[in-house]
Image 1 (spheres, rainbow, N blue to C red):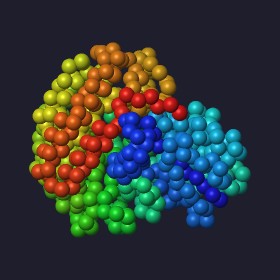
Image 2 (image 1 turned 60 degrees about the vertical axis):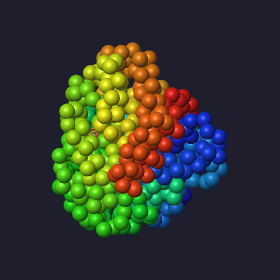
Image 3 (image 1 turned 45 degrees about the vertical axis):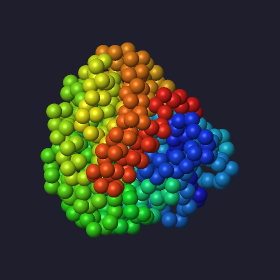
Image 4 (image 1 turned 120 degrees about the horizontal axis):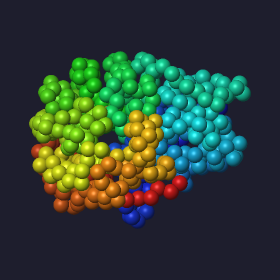
Length: 441
Ligand code: SF4
């Protein structure tokens, strides 16, 4: 069989109004860096029985070539791109091709997804996918497939042979996060609440087999089990690779051994969800790992060990009052975070936050294309939706003003070549992205 695994790419929509040649170049550079959000299609390709031919496409809607023949199409959905996914699914089905939908959004809204698919996969896909293909071949495809128990870490596949040339390689050393912050997509699929580290020797083998020297860890957080991560870092010292990973502020602020090993192993930077500089706001969404009073110490420690920090801040929590924007700008300037991001709180369907806000009658729209951290889709508590939108947009523009980008980039020189280049690249990337954009499928 010929199988297409497809995921929509909305990057075009977010790039500011550059001429198309420059946009194409930016597209390439960004995809090679920070825009690589998921390797779940690569994982499905890796568990597909070898007698089938698999093609992976990650592209904008316009670039889908419907004339190419496939027996079955699997589409990964997130909430933001779900309307695009449905449009692609509808077109393939119109042409008589069988379509399977999976991913975060289909898992959260299986009945909705089913209206656009022959079959829907709810939860992790690795164990279901080969079974589903067999059912399809026998003409016995089911409408829904549910992964009820967590995929065992030993079974998380090696994707080193499936990386697309336009994207930086990525790997998952572990899966899941036990913290269950109210807004986090990791809470959508039940099994993702269970932290599952893969055997270190398998992770190291996969890293060795990866093309190129830079990669990204797609783990929810590499600080959930610091001892595991330290052993992993020890095992990759000397491989001459560079990488980025997610981590939580609490552990990174105090575990110097972890930071030292990270640096030695080739870590260039940490992506940290600071989320808010209001402890009240953090409490309102159960972000237990973050203590605002320790943030500066965390930033200083990571810098001390020569790594950069990409820190995200979210606005619209119930503890947020209108002064949170100015206070965040002041904090970012004082702390020396190398690449800040400002996002609007988004209650993705399937998260406890979505259900709470729905119960409180505060969801303003279910137009999923607006669930992108750039629109206000719920009624905030202590400000109007317009105040939330305008202030977040203004903060984003302030973060990426020429003056701030230059200041942060120059400051990062002291961290060494790779963190400096990364700070430069990430800041330029963000300054080319449009915050206020309408995504139309
Ligand atoms: S700690 Fe991070 S990954 Fe874990 S639930 Fe919270 S936001 Fe999600």
